Length: 354
Image (cartoon, rainbow, N blue to C red; front, side, top):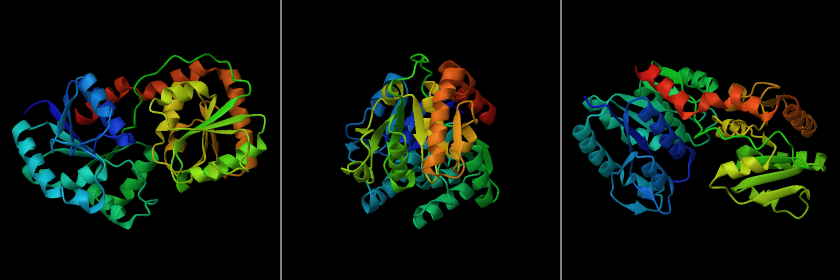
């Protein structure tokens, strides 16, 4: 049996699952395994594939082509071809185990079970908040087909256990690439409050507008894309909101702002929390399932707002600015961000697979 590990991912594009696939590959490599990222195809204009190759991580493009990301029936038509190539690859390589990120790779990897593959399936999205019935059914199927399941937060792991009959559910958080040195404990004048992510209904961009209108002495810098960007383009929005294009290098954004905010109705792991903490930024978030409550320690690396009102959220933002003055950014990094590095993840992999 070889020491290789297959990491199955939907495609290599600008998505959180793909970023985490590469970082977990680094962690597995540090733990003594040989990670091999397997993807149906590489998306056009993708720089994550180049990033993986720069880190000497092998990539297998099983359709041997570069294309725009497939959707709907066009992607399903590739199903049988992907299964065929995957079975051939598995028999040739015989990895120690297969690590799956994403429901679509989880679906087409089911045949590997019948030839004895040891599979670890990562479910990183809330089941109860999934409004797509088909995806909900598929995810319920996968967490019951695959017996070894990992999830990025304790809260989400507990949710999965309610739907999984006999699966072994283990918490393994998402990770950051590195822990940069903070730019110092000084605060911008005026202080800059940041939001980075999707502008979708779940993220409640309307709440950012409400809070910004109550804090005219602060600047609100928001970066991302999505359907609700129209709310930020209205002429009557507060003048202290500044909209930015999506950042390929989110580190530049974190270095520019002083506090990060999340105003969502629900979250998965919320990678932005540990990314912001790694730059020494406190995070103010609505207390929603599942990531924020697992990651934010009240008054230490941020604040949780149990029942959202713009007034209560505004108070928490001002308290977070004071938190930087009292604790300093380096304490936030040393206390929390160091738990989510590639090195710490390699230890978790050794414990889980050992």
